[in-house]
Image 1 (spheres, rainbow, N blue to C red):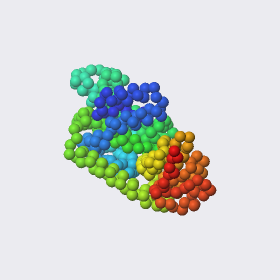
Image 2 (cartoon, rainbow, N blue to C red; image 1 turned 120 degrees about the horizontal axis):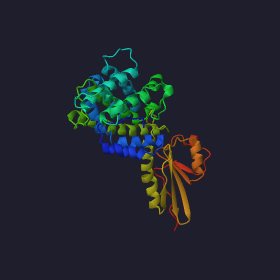
Image 3 (spheres, rainbow, N blue to C red; image 1 turned 120 degrees about the vertical axis):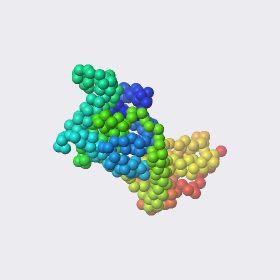
Image 4 (spheres, one colour; image 1 turned 90 degrees about the horizontal axis):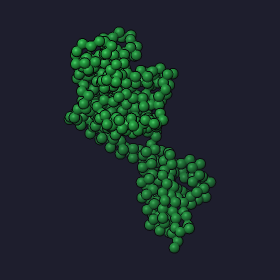
Length: 377
């Protein structure tokens, strides 16, 4: 799953996640990870990380304003930009944690230096300050004995084996790799779940720092939400609500020109199109068919949410209708639907219908105002 033992989450939830992926393929494990963590790394959780935990770490104090803006950017529709803003912050924070190290040290050296010192602090606490041989303070001995050491070590492995590994050595599925991002060798790092991964990784660095310098300023118990995090969370909700209204205005404007809403790297508009297509299908197509005496079966929108089909039946009589998201749909889709439908309708007003629906013999027109034939008794 390309992750580490998470802090600030109930162990019961972690075991539930691990149980669900125990016999899953790598692809399926990532899908299940994204599902489970979406219910755990919620908007309020993220707000607490940014407003209450990150400011406790000196290595992240310069990053907090950027993290706040990235958080709001995600819920304003600019997820790719928000992810891109946080990827370099991992290395910047790590460098500030080990500021006592040679500036020319490699990323691997910085990781080992920070994690080893944090583990030494954890080892001292594990043995309650008593003298023990150094062999008992090692990762090899404490990995299965101390949960903090285990969490720190798995974080080290994620940083070295995935985030900072060479591009040619990367074998993961999230594509969250610093070198792929920096050198532009792949764009799959824009996956939506990667924003949350980065935010939690930065917050985990705050915990690492507090054990590196033994300040213990960051608790492993998630703090209760205060006014700062609550206001940030509410601001994100407001941004998301405003973004939805903006998307509806955009799609209405673009539809007048037979276009889809412009795609963004992390949002191709399918979710919005599917919702709008389904809603108008029920209101403007299914309801009139039922009022006309037909029994109606509705199919799901296609993968790109460009159309959906409805089959109306009455006894032995069958009547097929397709609803297009827009009049300006490729002619190949018109021809495909014409083979199995008696009418092809579309949302909105006509836009150069003859340029798209040429060669079609079935009825083509806007769904608004369309009157279905009455079912014959």
